[in-house]
Length: 394
Image 1 (spheres, rainbow, N blue to C red):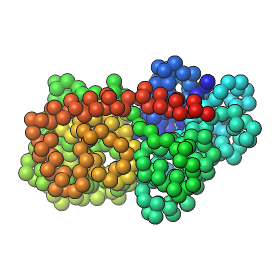
Image 2: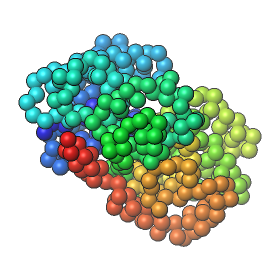
Image 3: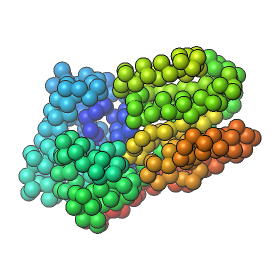
Image 4: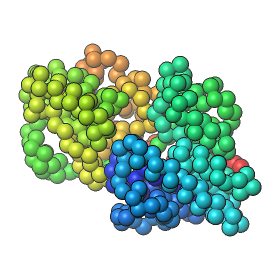
Protein backbone atom coordinates (compact mmCIF):
# COMPACT_ATOMS: atom_id res chain seq x y z
CA UNK A 1 0.00 0.00 0.00
CA UNK A 2 1.32 3.44 -0.94
CA UNK A 3 -0.06 6.59 0.69
CA UNK A 4 0.21 9.94 -1.06
CA UNK A 5 -0.31 12.97 1.16
CA UNK A 6 -1.16 15.85 -1.17
CA UNK A 7 0.04 19.36 -0.39
CA UNK A 8 -2.43 22.09 -1.26
CA UNK A 9 -0.10 24.44 -3.13
CA UNK A 10 -0.68 27.19 -0.58
CA UNK A 11 2.88 27.22 0.72
CA UNK A 12 5.64 24.58 0.47
CA UNK A 13 6.01 21.82 3.03
CA UNK A 14 7.48 21.98 5.63
CA UNK A 15 5.46 25.12 6.26
CA UNK A 16 7.61 28.13 7.11
CA UNK A 17 4.53 30.08 8.18
CA UNK A 18 1.38 29.23 10.10
CA UNK A 19 -0.26 27.23 7.30
CA UNK A 20 -2.39 24.75 9.22
CA UNK A 21 -3.16 22.29 6.41
CA UNK A 22 0.49 22.05 5.38
CA UNK A 23 1.40 21.35 9.00
CA UNK A 24 -1.19 18.56 9.07
CA UNK A 25 0.27 17.00 5.90
CA UNK A 26 3.79 17.18 7.31
CA UNK A 27 2.91 15.70 10.70
CA UNK A 28 0.70 12.94 9.27
CA UNK A 29 3.52 11.93 6.94
CA UNK A 30 6.01 11.77 9.80
CA UNK A 31 3.66 9.59 11.80
CA UNK A 32 2.90 7.29 8.85
CA UNK A 33 6.64 6.78 8.46
CA UNK A 34 6.96 5.93 12.16
CA UNK A 35 4.10 3.45 11.73
CA UNK A 36 6.05 1.76 8.95
CA UNK A 37 3.85 2.91 6.08
CA UNK A 38 5.06 3.63 2.56
CA UNK A 39 4.14 7.31 2.26
CA UNK A 40 5.13 10.24 0.07
CA UNK A 41 4.15 13.89 -0.10
CA UNK A 42 3.19 15.41 -3.44
CA UNK A 43 3.78 19.15 -3.21
CA UNK A 44 4.23 22.31 -5.24
CA UNK A 45 7.79 22.97 -6.43
CA UNK A 46 9.66 25.40 -4.21
CA UNK A 47 12.65 27.60 -4.97
CA UNK A 48 13.74 27.49 -1.33
CA UNK A 49 12.12 24.61 0.52
CA UNK A 50 13.05 24.36 4.19
CA UNK A 51 15.50 21.57 4.92
CA UNK A 52 13.64 18.31 5.49
CA UNK A 53 14.06 14.56 5.55
CA UNK A 54 10.49 14.00 4.36
CA UNK A 55 9.94 12.11 1.08
CA UNK A 56 8.59 14.84 -1.23
CA UNK A 57 7.90 14.75 -4.97
CA UNK A 58 7.54 18.18 -6.54
CA UNK A 59 4.99 19.32 -9.08
CA UNK A 60 6.59 21.95 -11.29
CA UNK A 61 4.65 25.12 -12.04
CA UNK A 62 5.75 28.23 -13.98
CA UNK A 63 8.31 30.26 -12.06
CA UNK A 64 6.25 33.45 -12.07
CA UNK A 65 3.62 31.82 -9.84
CA UNK A 66 6.03 29.98 -7.54
CA UNK A 67 6.65 33.06 -5.47
CA UNK A 68 5.23 33.28 -1.97
CA UNK A 69 1.73 34.53 -2.64
CA UNK A 70 -0.76 33.82 0.14
CA UNK A 71 -2.78 37.02 -0.09
CA UNK A 72 -5.80 35.12 -1.45
CA UNK A 73 -5.96 37.58 -4.36
CA UNK A 74 -6.12 36.87 -8.08
CA UNK A 75 -2.53 35.68 -8.47
CA UNK A 76 -2.99 33.29 -5.58
CA UNK A 77 -6.06 31.78 -7.25
CA UNK A 78 -4.13 31.44 -10.52
CA UNK A 79 -1.37 29.62 -8.65
CA UNK A 80 -3.83 27.23 -7.03
CA UNK A 81 -5.54 26.42 -10.35
CA UNK A 82 -2.29 25.93 -12.28
CA UNK A 83 -0.85 23.75 -9.52
CA UNK A 84 -4.07 21.71 -9.31
CA UNK A 85 -4.01 21.02 -13.05
CA UNK A 86 -0.33 20.00 -12.97
CA UNK A 87 -1.01 17.94 -9.85
CA UNK A 88 -3.86 16.06 -11.53
CA UNK A 89 -1.60 15.12 -14.45
CA UNK A 90 1.14 13.97 -12.06
CA UNK A 91 -1.32 11.80 -10.12
CA UNK A 92 -2.61 10.32 -13.36
CA UNK A 93 0.93 9.18 -14.20
CA UNK A 94 1.30 7.62 -10.76
CA UNK A 95 -1.97 5.72 -11.06
CA UNK A 96 -1.21 4.61 -14.60
CA UNK A 97 2.06 2.99 -13.51
CA UNK A 98 1.01 1.67 -10.12
CA UNK A 99 0.47 -2.03 -9.47
CA UNK A 100 -0.18 -1.69 -5.74
CA UNK A 101 -2.98 -0.29 -3.62
CA UNK A 102 -2.82 3.50 -3.69
CA UNK A 103 -4.32 5.92 -1.20
CA UNK A 104 -4.66 9.55 -2.30
CA UNK A 105 -5.31 11.91 0.58
CA UNK A 106 -6.57 15.32 -0.55
CA UNK A 107 -6.85 18.35 1.74
CA UNK A 108 -8.05 21.03 -0.67
CA UNK A 109 -11.08 21.48 -2.93
CA UNK A 110 -9.15 22.89 -5.90
CA UNK A 111 -6.75 19.94 -5.93
CA UNK A 112 -9.39 17.25 -5.89
CA UNK A 113 -11.85 19.04 -8.16
CA UNK A 114 -9.33 19.27 -11.01
CA UNK A 115 -8.19 15.70 -10.33
CA UNK A 116 -11.79 14.56 -10.86
CA UNK A 117 -12.08 16.59 -14.05
CA UNK A 118 -8.77 15.56 -15.62
CA UNK A 119 -8.29 11.95 -14.51
CA UNK A 120 -10.68 9.38 -15.92
CA UNK A 121 -12.65 6.92 -13.83
CA UNK A 122 -10.53 4.04 -15.14
CA UNK A 123 -7.51 5.40 -13.26
CA UNK A 124 -9.37 6.91 -10.31
CA UNK A 125 -10.78 3.49 -9.44
CA UNK A 126 -7.26 2.20 -8.83
CA UNK A 127 -7.05 4.42 -5.73
CA UNK A 128 -8.81 4.84 -2.42
CA UNK A 129 -9.56 8.55 -2.26
CA UNK A 130 -9.64 10.36 1.07
CA UNK A 131 -10.75 13.96 1.52
CA UNK A 132 -10.30 15.92 4.74
CA UNK A 133 -12.51 18.97 5.10
CA UNK A 134 -10.46 21.59 6.95
CA UNK A 135 -12.63 24.63 6.22
CA UNK A 136 -14.06 26.66 9.08
CA UNK A 137 -17.03 27.66 6.87
CA UNK A 138 -18.82 24.34 7.40
CA UNK A 139 -18.75 24.95 11.15
CA UNK A 140 -21.77 27.29 10.86
CA UNK A 141 -25.51 26.71 10.83
CA UNK A 142 -26.75 25.74 7.36
CA UNK A 143 -29.03 28.75 6.83
CA UNK A 144 -26.07 31.02 7.55
CA UNK A 145 -23.55 29.28 5.29
CA UNK A 146 -25.66 27.96 2.38
CA UNK A 147 -25.04 30.90 0.04
CA UNK A 148 -21.30 30.79 0.73
CA UNK A 149 -21.19 27.05 0.06
CA UNK A 150 -23.08 27.49 -3.22
CA UNK A 151 -20.85 30.30 -4.46
CA UNK A 152 -17.39 29.43 -3.12
CA UNK A 153 -17.38 25.79 -2.04
CA UNK A 154 -19.19 24.03 -4.88
CA UNK A 155 -15.84 22.39 -5.76
CA UNK A 156 -15.61 20.99 -2.26
CA UNK A 157 -19.15 19.62 -2.50
CA UNK A 158 -18.27 17.87 -5.77
CA UNK A 159 -15.05 16.52 -4.26
CA UNK A 160 -16.72 15.11 -1.17
CA UNK A 161 -19.39 13.40 -3.24
CA UNK A 162 -16.72 11.48 -5.15
CA UNK A 163 -14.42 10.65 -2.23
CA UNK A 164 -14.42 7.14 -0.79
CA UNK A 165 -14.06 8.49 2.72
CA UNK A 166 -14.52 12.01 4.09
CA UNK A 167 -12.88 13.18 7.29
CA UNK A 168 -14.28 16.14 9.21
CA UNK A 169 -12.98 17.93 12.28
CA UNK A 170 -16.21 18.70 14.14
CA UNK A 171 -19.77 17.44 14.50
CA UNK A 172 -21.39 20.50 12.91
CA UNK A 173 -19.47 19.96 9.67
CA UNK A 174 -20.56 16.33 9.63
CA UNK A 175 -24.17 17.34 10.21
CA UNK A 176 -24.12 19.84 7.32
CA UNK A 177 -22.52 17.37 4.93
CA UNK A 178 -24.88 14.52 5.73
CA UNK A 179 -28.14 16.44 6.10
CA UNK A 180 -27.73 19.15 3.46
CA UNK A 181 -25.32 17.78 0.86
CA UNK A 182 -26.83 14.32 0.93
CA UNK A 183 -23.64 12.36 1.52
CA UNK A 184 -24.09 8.95 3.13
CA UNK A 185 -23.28 9.02 6.83
CA UNK A 186 -21.21 5.83 6.46
CA UNK A 187 -18.63 7.73 4.37
CA UNK A 188 -18.09 10.55 6.87
CA UNK A 189 -15.71 10.14 9.80
CA UNK A 190 -15.03 12.53 12.65
CA UNK A 191 -11.31 12.91 13.30
CA UNK A 192 -9.20 15.15 15.52
CA UNK A 193 -6.21 17.24 14.61
CA UNK A 194 -3.02 16.53 16.50
CA UNK A 195 0.06 18.31 17.77
CA UNK A 196 3.79 17.62 17.84
CA UNK A 197 4.35 17.33 21.58
CA UNK A 198 8.14 17.28 21.21
CA UNK A 199 8.15 20.65 19.45
CA UNK A 200 5.47 22.32 21.57
CA UNK A 201 6.52 21.97 25.19
CA UNK A 202 7.01 23.97 28.37
CA UNK A 203 10.36 25.72 28.56
CA UNK A 204 12.46 26.12 31.74
CA UNK A 205 11.57 29.18 33.80
CA UNK A 206 14.99 30.74 33.24
CA UNK A 207 14.49 30.54 29.48
CA UNK A 208 11.00 32.05 29.77
CA UNK A 209 12.39 34.96 31.80
CA UNK A 210 15.05 35.53 29.14
CA UNK A 211 12.35 35.54 26.47
CA UNK A 212 10.34 38.10 28.42
CA UNK A 213 13.37 40.33 28.50
CA UNK A 214 13.77 39.85 24.75
CA UNK A 215 10.14 40.88 24.21
CA UNK A 216 10.61 43.81 26.62
CA UNK A 217 7.96 42.52 29.04
CA UNK A 218 10.15 41.57 31.97
CA UNK A 219 8.13 41.57 35.19
CA UNK A 220 4.84 41.57 33.25
CA UNK A 221 1.99 39.05 33.24
CA UNK A 222 1.42 38.27 29.58
CA UNK A 223 -1.62 36.86 27.80
CA UNK A 224 -1.18 35.74 24.21
CA UNK A 225 -3.13 34.92 21.08
CA UNK A 226 -1.98 33.27 17.84
CA UNK A 227 -3.91 33.44 14.57
CA UNK A 228 -4.43 35.48 11.44
CA UNK A 229 -5.34 39.05 12.32
CA UNK A 230 -8.94 39.36 11.19
CA UNK A 231 -12.48 39.64 12.51
CA UNK A 232 -13.01 35.86 12.57
CA UNK A 233 -10.06 35.27 14.88
CA UNK A 234 -11.46 38.06 17.05
CA UNK A 235 -8.35 39.53 18.68
CA UNK A 236 -10.31 42.67 19.57
CA UNK A 237 -12.62 40.66 21.81
CA UNK A 238 -9.58 39.23 23.60
CA UNK A 239 -8.48 42.75 24.47
CA UNK A 240 -11.99 43.71 25.60
CA UNK A 241 -12.15 40.60 27.82
CA UNK A 242 -8.81 41.52 29.38
CA UNK A 243 -9.64 45.21 29.71
CA UNK A 244 -10.85 45.15 33.36
CA UNK A 245 -7.77 43.19 34.37
CA UNK A 246 -5.46 45.50 32.40
CA UNK A 247 -7.02 48.57 34.02
CA UNK A 248 -6.65 47.04 37.47
CA UNK A 249 -3.05 45.90 36.96
CA UNK A 250 -0.64 47.91 34.82
CA UNK A 251 1.68 44.90 34.58
CA UNK A 252 -0.78 42.92 32.43
CA UNK A 253 0.04 42.88 28.71
CA UNK A 254 -1.54 41.28 25.63
CA UNK A 255 0.68 39.92 22.85
CA UNK A 256 -0.73 38.66 19.56
CA UNK A 257 0.96 37.08 16.55
CA UNK A 258 -0.14 36.07 13.07
CA UNK A 259 -0.36 37.27 9.50
CA UNK A 260 -2.43 40.40 8.96
CA UNK A 261 -5.39 39.40 6.79
CA UNK A 262 -7.30 42.64 7.33
CA UNK A 263 -5.44 45.94 7.66
CA UNK A 264 -8.76 47.54 8.60
CA UNK A 265 -9.19 45.13 11.51
CA UNK A 266 -5.61 45.69 12.63
CA UNK A 267 -6.36 49.42 12.71
CA UNK A 268 -9.46 48.79 14.84
CA UNK A 269 -7.23 47.02 17.37
CA UNK A 270 -4.78 49.92 17.37
CA UNK A 271 -7.59 52.46 17.77
CA UNK A 272 -9.16 50.57 20.69
CA UNK A 273 -5.79 50.26 22.42
CA UNK A 274 -5.17 53.99 22.02
CA UNK A 275 -8.65 54.93 23.28
CA UNK A 276 -7.96 52.93 26.44
CA UNK A 277 -4.34 54.07 26.87
CA UNK A 278 -3.04 50.57 26.17
CA UNK A 279 -0.78 51.35 23.19
CA UNK A 280 2.31 50.03 24.99
CA UNK A 281 0.54 46.99 26.43
CA UNK A 282 -1.23 45.63 23.34
CA UNK A 283 1.70 44.35 21.32
CA UNK A 284 1.67 42.91 17.80
CA UNK A 285 4.55 40.45 17.38
CA UNK A 286 4.33 39.75 13.66
CA UNK A 287 3.96 36.42 11.88
CA UNK A 288 5.98 33.68 13.57
CA UNK A 289 7.33 30.50 12.04
CA UNK A 290 5.73 27.26 13.27
CA UNK A 291 7.91 25.17 15.52
CA UNK A 292 10.50 26.48 17.95
CA UNK A 293 9.82 30.18 17.37
CA UNK A 294 6.10 29.77 17.93
CA UNK A 295 6.65 27.55 20.96
CA UNK A 296 8.75 30.28 22.58
CA UNK A 297 5.91 32.72 22.02
CA UNK A 298 3.34 30.44 23.67
CA UNK A 299 5.60 30.10 26.69
CA UNK A 300 5.36 33.84 27.34
CA UNK A 301 1.68 33.49 28.23
CA UNK A 302 -0.01 32.91 31.55
CA UNK A 303 -2.85 31.81 29.28
CA UNK A 304 -3.84 32.05 25.64
CA UNK A 305 -7.12 33.67 24.61
CA UNK A 306 -8.77 32.28 21.49
CA UNK A 307 -12.32 33.67 21.09
CA UNK A 308 -12.50 32.74 17.40
CA UNK A 309 -15.94 32.89 15.80
CA UNK A 310 -15.56 29.78 13.62
CA UNK A 311 -12.97 27.02 13.23
CA UNK A 312 -12.60 23.57 11.76
CA UNK A 313 -10.24 22.41 14.50
CA UNK A 314 -7.62 24.98 15.40
CA UNK A 315 -4.06 23.70 15.74
CA UNK A 316 -2.97 26.66 17.85
CA UNK A 317 -5.18 25.57 20.74
CA UNK A 318 -3.42 22.20 20.90
CA UNK A 319 0.00 23.79 20.42
CA UNK A 320 -0.49 26.17 23.33
CA UNK A 321 -1.86 23.44 25.58
CA UNK A 322 1.05 21.18 24.63
CA UNK A 323 3.34 23.99 25.82
CA UNK A 324 1.52 23.92 29.16
CA UNK A 325 -0.41 27.12 28.47
CA UNK A 326 -4.11 27.08 29.45
CA UNK A 327 -6.44 28.25 26.66
CA UNK A 328 -9.72 30.20 26.83
CA UNK A 329 -12.21 29.46 24.04
CA UNK A 330 -15.84 30.37 23.53
CA UNK A 331 -18.37 27.61 24.01
CA UNK A 332 -19.46 28.04 20.38
CA UNK A 333 -16.39 26.25 19.01
CA UNK A 334 -17.90 22.85 18.39
CA UNK A 335 -14.91 20.57 17.86
CA UNK A 336 -13.99 18.17 20.61
CA UNK A 337 -11.57 19.52 23.20
CA UNK A 338 -10.25 18.21 26.47
CA UNK A 339 -12.20 19.37 29.51
CA UNK A 340 -8.94 21.04 30.57
CA UNK A 341 -9.59 23.68 27.93
CA UNK A 342 -11.19 26.76 29.52
CA UNK A 343 -14.52 27.18 27.76
CA UNK A 344 -16.51 30.31 28.62
CA UNK A 345 -19.85 31.75 27.50
CA UNK A 346 -19.62 35.48 28.27
CA UNK A 347 -17.54 38.19 29.96
CA UNK A 348 -18.70 37.32 33.47
CA UNK A 349 -17.88 33.65 32.91
CA UNK A 350 -14.46 34.59 31.54
CA UNK A 351 -13.70 36.76 34.58
CA UNK A 352 -14.77 34.00 36.98
CA UNK A 353 -12.58 31.37 35.31
CA UNK A 354 -9.66 33.81 35.10
CA UNK A 355 -9.85 34.47 38.84
CA UNK A 356 -10.35 30.82 39.81
CA UNK A 357 -7.91 29.09 37.44
CA UNK A 358 -5.25 31.53 36.20
CA UNK A 359 -4.73 34.27 38.80
CA UNK A 360 -4.11 31.75 41.55
CA UNK A 361 -1.37 29.37 42.65
CA UNK A 362 -3.41 26.60 41.04
CA UNK A 363 -2.37 27.85 37.60
CA UNK A 364 0.85 25.77 37.68
CA UNK A 365 -1.12 22.60 38.38
CA UNK A 366 -3.47 23.49 35.51
CA UNK A 367 -0.43 23.93 33.27
CA UNK A 368 0.66 20.37 33.98
CA UNK A 369 -2.89 19.10 33.46
CA UNK A 370 -3.35 20.70 30.03
CA UNK A 371 -0.01 19.32 28.87
CA UNK A 372 -0.97 15.83 30.09
CA UNK A 373 -4.37 16.05 28.39
CA UNK A 374 -2.66 16.70 25.06
CA UNK A 375 -0.17 13.89 25.56
CA UNK A 376 -3.01 11.45 26.20
CA UNK A 377 -5.38 12.51 23.44
CA UNK A 378 -3.79 14.46 20.58
CA UNK A 379 -0.60 12.78 19.43
CA UNK A 380 -0.17 12.62 15.63
CA UNK A 381 0.63 8.90 15.74
CA UNK A 382 -2.88 8.20 17.02
CA UNK A 383 -4.44 10.44 14.38
CA UNK A 384 -2.42 8.78 11.60
CA UNK A 385 -3.47 5.34 12.84
CA UNK A 386 -7.12 6.39 12.68
CA UNK A 387 -6.72 7.60 9.09
CA UNK A 388 -4.93 4.41 8.06
CA UNK A 389 -7.42 2.08 9.70
CA UNK A 390 -10.41 3.74 8.01
CA UNK A 391 -8.70 3.89 4.60
CA UNK A 392 -8.01 0.15 4.89
CA UNK A 393 -11.75 -0.57 5.03
CA UNK A 394 -12.01 -0.27 1.23
